Length: 217
Length: 192
Image 1 (tube, chains in turn blue, cyan):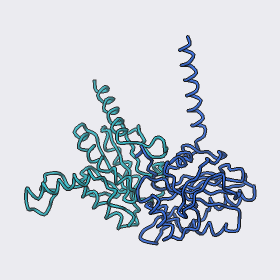
Image 2: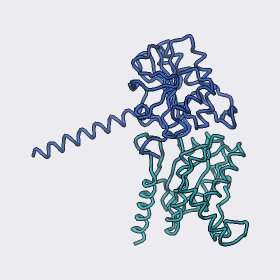
Image 3: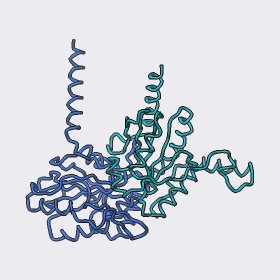
Image 4: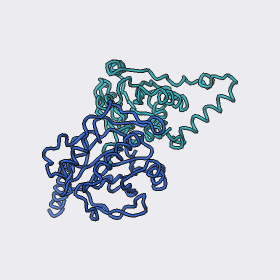
């Protein structure tokens, strides 16, 4: 009898866990959904030599973005990302790029090179454990996550409606013509103004290069 | 160029190198693929969405494994030689291994590199290139990223969709083999 009860509790616990995981998924993201809290992260190394922790972030709005040194979709939007950071330079916005890939070309020494070559004006962290990547459900690079003052997710997906691809050094091609719907910009503006309910698009499919996780592909 | 050759699966390169060595030993003919007695790597045929649907339907009643890949996708390149192995293993059992390339149709350099790569690893199964806007293709196939493998049963129904979309459940080569074996077992049962 005791064994049956223990089994029943285990089954209920497993069902509840699976349900909660399923309930948390977005339309395209398998883990995060709009309104979910920003995952905590602690003392992750950045290309500047400093570490960064989620609880140290003082800015009102946080933009997290997965990048990869080797992904042409990621390299293709670098200029637009730098421009976005410049645009909100005087606002209370923190932009943090994240590297998760197991590829050696995506690890810290190469990250530092890339940040210098491209003139990154934002923090670029390495998540070697991939815990943050998994917690965000990041499946591709680049993939953006915008969190508001309460550290709730208000947007995730593409930077804008026209993913760009690097074709040759320093040359990017917009795959859907000049961008016209600036999803991240719109979400940040509304998060700063505390008008998140007016964000035009909450989630898009972040087309790009699949992130290689340990024990994965 | 973003593609890093060092990421190509070493086994695949060894396979190609071994095939080349055998060829050179066998004969001094410059057409190496003909020398070793294996079919030449299939030329990538450009297909529209409509042509692709027709092509896919033409494979019935075979189980069809479609590998969606591109030269810019390092993990696609790394695992592609496994598809060559699977072709060798399962084509005698009537399974169609097919590769559908999603490189930018407006980037002739990438397309040429893709064709060269197929030759290098001796990919003799059917190879296609999606002749549509790349993002339209992602939407059409409901993809977020590649590599992705879609497996169809003998009636043309999509039965398995293997992707890297969930960081905790990214597909493995074993997942592909399990899916193929399940569908082959179904076919055997139905034939009884």
